[in-house]
Each structure stands twice: as structure tokens, then as C-alpha cells.
Amino acid sequence: MEGSSTKGSPSCAGCLNNIGEDDSISALDQEWHTDCFRCSACDCTLSKWYMERDGLLFCERDYWTRFGYACHQCAEVITGPVMAAGALRYHPECFQCAACGARVAAEQPYALVERRLYCEPCYVCTERPRARALRVLRVPAAALKDSEGRCAGKMAAMAGAVLRAALAVCIQLTCHRY
Image 1 (spheres, rainbow, N blue to C red):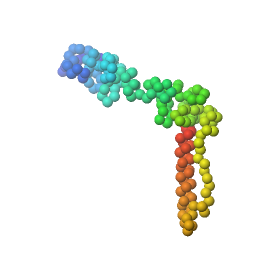
Image 2: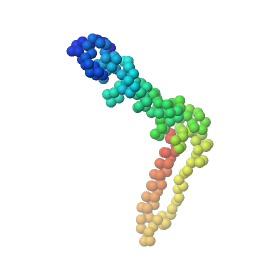
Image 3: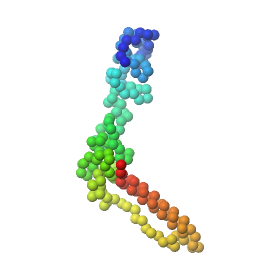
């Protein structure tokens, strides 16, 4: 990647001057003087190792600061593997129960309640009794009839479908299994 370039004297993508006999770096299908190959955010000189986004060059620190996820637990930028719970992101080592502090592995069941992560045992012991639930009531079909006795079957079926859908959403939002 580094080398001298004299063929046709290409222009530097950073300063637009001819590279001539100066040392250069080839990156993003362009030639750069080694002194012009810099981070777009902090202006530090880059080596052959760099990060790129939308045609801009970044050092690793600035790239992750701008485009990485912040860990919900420690608030540090995540630069490696990510554990996700709903819209929240965690370092694998920060993916731990809010009640007991135990790490929750990717294959273990967990619950996310009010942006707090719980392992299955802690959720069952501490959170589930406090969780709100839907109470399903059985309504006799006769109670759903209008004054002339019409639509009882359709109304009962529709009410049952709505309750089943609401219950499924509550279960999905309350307890996640992966």
C-alpha cells in the first residue's frame, strides 16, 4: 500500500497537490501523501489501518464514538460483539441481571421490564408477582346480542380474537426467550 508513485504523477486526495516522489498510501481508490492521510474528525495522522464511512476517513476511536452503540449498562461505546434486548444494546460482559448481577448468556431466557434486564429466576421470584396481567372474562353470547338477537356470534368471535391478540402482545413484551 505504501510506495513511491511517479507514473503520471497522481494528485493527493487530501491536499490535491501532485504526489511526485513522496511516500503515499492508496486507500478508497485514491492516493494520499502519508501526511495528508488523516482522520476526518480529530485530524490525527492515520496509518494503513483506518475506518471509513460515506467516503470519510476516521481513526478507530472517532469512528466508534460517532457510529457505535453505547452500552445500556456501562455507557461505553461497544466496539465488539453486541447483546441486544429490545432496543437496548450491551457488551456481552454487561448483559447481566439487574437484581442479582449474574451474567445472562445469549441462550438463556431473560425478561426486560421497564428497561431493566432480569435473569429468569429473578424475574420469576421478584418481578412476575408485581407484573400486571390481562384478566380474561367470559361473556355469555346472549349478553352480546342486540335487542333483536343479532350478531352475537360475530361479536363473541371478534372479542375473543382481540383478547387473544392483546394477551400475545403482553407475553411477547414481558418475557423474551432466545
